[in-house]
Length: 304
Ligand SMILES: [Zn+2]
Image (cartoon, rainbow, N blue to C red; front, side, top):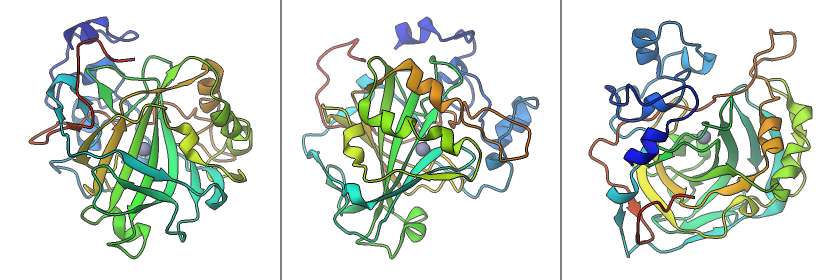
């Protein structure tokens, strides 16, 4: 871990690693602190409107994202493989939410979703979206041994056995299951390119385009090893309703594909243009949680 920390990223050297909110958060810019720390510690930092209203779960104890310490995660042989089955025809549209771009699905269909793994029920697919940085050196919400990836995909599912709808589930116990997939630079991702191709149509906030049938399982890595822990939404209301399932292996995307993400805007038509970058929440303390893994760690330096 120390080695990863000492490598640092960008202009942010690990000089102030230990802050009140946990280690390693000095390794990337802090535009997206939760509002109290933003106000207290970084009065000059930019605030996205998302973070300026009242946020109900501040002070929660099981918040996300976190830094996953590989060696501190506990292998759980009881963790079954995750079963993933998505209906491509339930894909509806892609839109600019003003914070990231998101692909929406018709969640009236019980079949399209995930089960198994750490989940006690079947969870329906609702939407997926990405978080990314201003440069390739940071952008993911979760980190692994202090390492940030340039982007992170979140596939959001809700517990349709326990709740009537997505809205109820977002604030309910065991309401959501989110698969996190890290993106790293490499070869062009052909499936992702289908989304990249339509991004010019959603440059401004609150714009949307049709996607056509799309099966997001094509965005999952071939190796399905994962970490899991109980946490929260990383956007308001920050409800602690999420079973996180973080894929160990990243997927590869081309630099040009990430660059296309950064051509989007936080701003709407007629507003001053503000590039959509650094739309991640800072790390939150692990507190009394354990991160479980579906795989056995067999050595050091295994991060891809
Ligand atoms: Zn997210």
